[in-house]
Amino acid sequence: MRAFGTCSALVTASVVSLVTSSCAAPAATSTARAPSAASAPAGTAAPGSTGYHAGGTLEAVAATSAADAWAVGDLGKQNTPLIVHWNGTSWSRVRAGAPAGTELRAVAASSPGNAWALGQTWRTDSSRSMPVILHWNGRAWRQVPSPAPPGAFLNSVSVTSPANAWVVGGYSADRSVGSTRPIALHWNGSAWRRVPVPAGAAAELTGVSATSASNAWAVGGPLGGTTGFVLHWDGSSWTQVPSAPASAGEPIAVAATATDYAWLADSAQGTEVTWPGGRVAGLWNGRDWTAVPIPLVQTHEEGRGGDVKALAVAGHAAWMAGDYCTTPTSCGNGQLLPLLLRWSGGAWQPTPLPANDAIFGLAVLSSTSAWAVGDDSGNPTSPYETLILHWNGTTWS
Image 1 (spheres, rainbow, N blue to C red):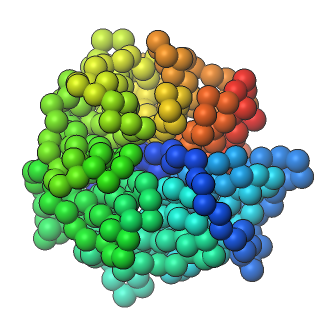
Image 2: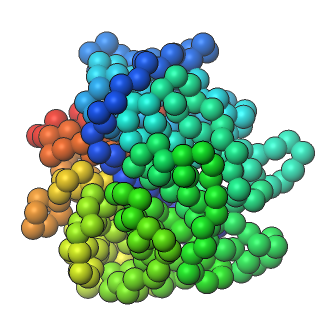
């Protein structure tokens, strides 16, 4: 998923959310009535395919089972929020229940009857955006009141139950340079409330992932800086956790499945940070974070390197999406290639993509089932079109 805040300039319309909707929800056990399709047709699902085709971009995806997945984004020039649902057979559009002009950038679900989506909308009478939080109750998407102030950008959402969800992002305290503050919101089953976070000024939170009411991770960093931070929720408060991978970069996404298993991804761009051999990911073992190299994604002295856009985990099955460049010259010219990396248990391994497309969101169900969403911006000769890929344990298609 991609961040709304000032830091999104660092990743130039390519990131965040990291993520996202970055977390893969546990398989759901409850049941809910199937979603109703939107009344206005906008896009098609090709017979026998796992895709949904419309003019626009899908920014994030979440899945709870082989028959329940959500993807969110927008319809591009139509400036219309887009939500599509997978029922095990096909993708179909579902009414968003959001104001016109809303851009959706993150989604998370814990069951077929409980999902959350984040976005922001621009009011015609104001230059400031308004944060939008949507909830799916098994029948419809509806906007839910939020304590986030006007102008806040909500980057990531995670949910474990109807009474436990987190949203993180940032907001501008007084609209002046350097006034950005991180924000964390918690859902207790009836309302969202702000929760204090131990992070300083000119910073935002870019990713959150929870496994229970007493275990959650959040990551972020200063806007335009190179020193990130990692926060942990123990059920009563957020505390900052020392982290070698985060202390030298900008962690953009985090995904956890247990108290002793979590990943974070460093998404800093530019020449501020130079890791030997390229970027690194952080792996949590229950005691500390260790650095794991990310292949291909490197920082080049003569131009920007690659980038990590999305991270998702289920059990010990982990995926990472991003882009990379082959030489300093191609980096400087912005000639980036997409990548999807799978954690093999010992290293991150690249997997072939069916086309040169952009991936912004990931969801993982198991080692043999995962979703990736984005758009076909790798094809410069045509307008952007939504992209959905599925991993069957062997290939992406």
